[in-house]
Length: 255
Image (cartoon, rainbow, N blue to C red; front, side):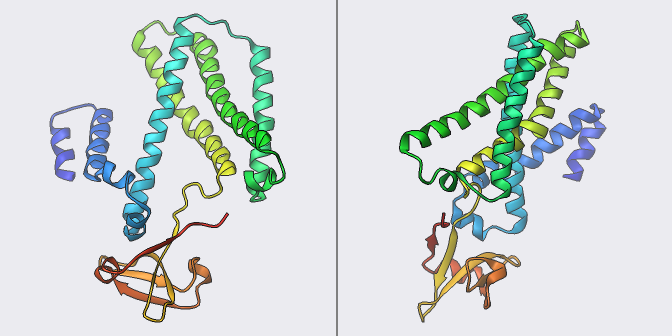
């Protein structure tokens, strides 16, 4: 990796391009498709470094996808010369903030969709889910509208490259600082097990369950008697090859 960076520097490319190329090559070496599409069993057997790589790749992809949506819609608003309505935008922003408070409070109280609407009818539940999805869509649309019909006009850029660079920067900024964090809170409210890995265990000769936590080095895995690591009263260390040749069972996370 260092040799490659030296070669790129030798070619006298701009530092920004060198950084982007180095990042792309690093991500390619991680085998992103294999990591992102790995099963829950594979993820448990991964080292901590690989788990971090999966989270980084996933987050990187979400940022790029979100920023592309914002940028495309914003540029569409800009080139269509859509008029900016300050009062309507302000009211919409206030309503979105009130909705965010609802999601945030329930997440802080560890209350999820099934608990809050436990006694509600099926129709009500579907309505709430639809409203949550509409909320996310409106949030993206409002950010794009504000960027395309107000911010781009306020800077008064004339060069195409300046307009694209400005839009790209703020699309990334909005995605990282606002859109993705809020979207994750909403999804976590709808599904409390979002991004959680099911409990995976093996059984010994006495039919006792041993839950697989994570590798402690290249060839060893840490197991315990409880599904939650900190609550386990007994721990054992087993060879990776021994685990792989054992029947592995999956226990879905309880709601």
